[in-house]
Length: 431
Ligand code: 4AD
Ligand code: MG
Image (cartoon, rainbow, N blue to C red):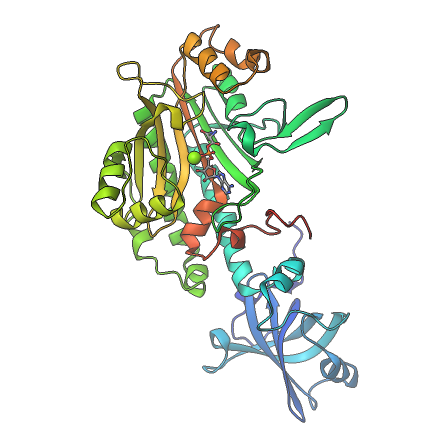
């Protein structure tokens, strides 16, 4: 990389040597012969002090004119001061405005709608910046784990011809003379890739046309999906718990500062170590009923039940062996007791609930075809997928981890929307 003559805030240490910084104005305080400007860059903030006697007329005029969120470049040397942010401040010898522009519209106590309309500007807030730094490392740690464990990263398509997760949440679009859909999951394509690469993953956008507005759903999210040949239900769960434990540990090692600024109590995160606790769906229902719920054996666990269960268990845990008709056509049915299928959800504690769904895939050709028809779908739309069970079919498993669900839990945020720049929700595709 070409070396820049500009430093970043986090590199600044007390010294007689002059350094240059550039960034944006976070705060300003003006006195008669001194002006204090807090400069913000990607790595932090630092207070800069300019005094009339030490600056050229031009630099002093610039300081007098500068406003919040103007882009600036400064020169000076850093001095230790116990009262300053991070105990250092810059004593300026020069101050330039890169771009002055208009009055910044974001201020304290604005309505949620105003903030959402101005997401493009609100992204500069500390909260958003801290969350984005954590999320960047969630994706980085996931890639590292897959790389270390010999998975190939692949790039399956996002435009698809048929549903993976049920027709109700499909976004359709005109694709020349045909109808196409936005991907809900690249799982079916990953399944095709295991026959050559054996262990594959993809990190792609997934779309769900869910109409409800909740704190845990967005209509576009980033999906971390893995698929492995010759791995059964149990082996797949081991992969998931190792991956999630690795990501959580990576964040605790590398993002302590961000989590602290977000006010996250990390005590439960510190206990996230493989293996995780496992309970069956039946045990989950019993446990909920012991805690005041009145569920029947094949009732769906909705948000409320999931949140309650997640609080009861109090640590990351898997719910395994769901009723077969709860889960999509591709999940392997337990041939010994077809009421149950080899699907598991990984639940985050503290009320956050599901962050992964995964399981073993159906490899019995007739069962697969029957299940596709039971969904009311055309066999011909899935012919290529059914083909995979005709030529050297092997047992295999996989999973999908929502990058935003995981980041939401790790950061301990109120709503998942806060983990996505420009979240797509029911009423919003702007900005
Ligand atoms: O549970 P889901 O629907 O499972 C699948 O899509 C499988 N085909 C994955 C696979 O086996 N390859 O979605 C998987 C995960 C969820 O557990 C959740 O983390 C996330 O994707 N997810 C969402 N995240 C945010 N908003 C939504 N609307 C989400 N829907 C799913
Ligand atoms: Mg699921």
